[in-house]
Length: 261
Image 1 (tube, one colour):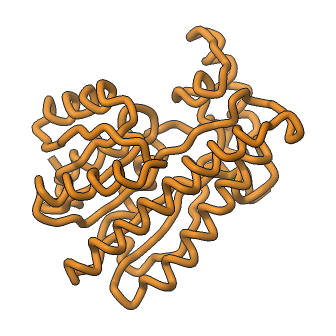
Image 2 (spheres, rainbow, N blue to C red; image 1 turned 90 degrees about the horizontal axis):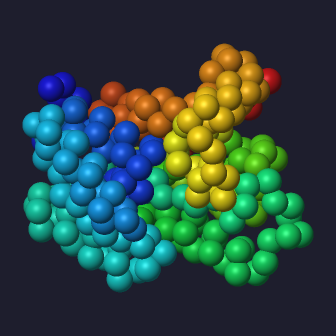
């Protein structure tokens, strides 16, 4: 087991699948003790089983990141188990109710739910992370999951607006928290057809169809490959580690060169 995060304790939200699961597993491989948080507790427990099966330490927590009291309990659980907190990865995000839907087809209910989870969840995660880090007096690291859709007009308009909000919140909190040695960054993935994001957006495909979509998506990226959860986990690991100790306020595209075209 490597030790880039040895002795660190981390909270990863949305860790029951996709980028969150890959990141929680990767953090544990590097020595972190991980709170595996997800709205689906059974999925969180499966991630914990994977971590423990490789000799790591993890605790599952069920949480709706749009619910402030549940977020408070998640942070309290982390400190109760590990006595301190070093890393918070606010990774939860939901897509539009139907991938490809037009702006005018969104209802106010759609808008409010996307804002509550994608932006509100990051707000709450950042708020309680900053409070905990300040109380410890030893600094800390926050990482948020943005999106290429928050950098350019790509993907659903309302979804992209929430991710744009995540990036501005990331930059603003990074500057405000810097005097307390709290770093705040974001990763911005491009399309990830091999995760569960398509199914969450109402698109049900079989394995062969998914592979075909991944190939087509990869053609949109200059490097020619679709983005995987593991790609994001590696970027996340770097940004939360001490190797990035002088990096804050950054929105790092994990996009195969898409936004640089």
